[in-house]
Image 1 (cartoon, rainbow, N blue to C red):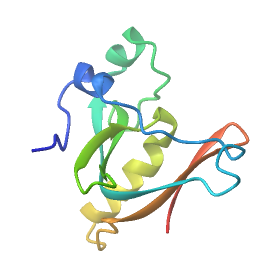
Image 2: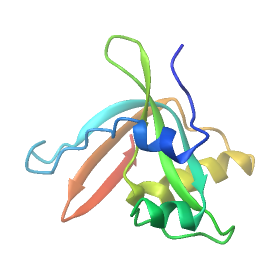
Image 3: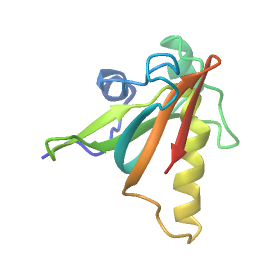
Image 4: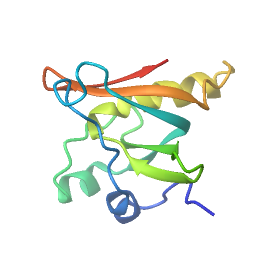
Length: 123
């Protein structure tokens, strides 16, 4: 069975990073993945600093390190580490569900690096 979440910073760091193409590589289309779930590992600022991660603590005092569970083309599932810059996107999606809004996942999400910024858009 596929790993669906992480509970330590070493586990998060050991995850493969989701391949996100540049706009040029993808000819402006990005990479579309079937996202089954989005989450994060809440690390202490000291943990992030020790590993040189540019993650800012939020109001809880934790640095949220984002993850996503992807359905691969062969039907299998794999947990990936998302770039730290997508922590707000992941946190927002988790918060919306926790506040009673319908879970948007599973759904297709387009990821792309454009103008030195990584984007995630629910399709």
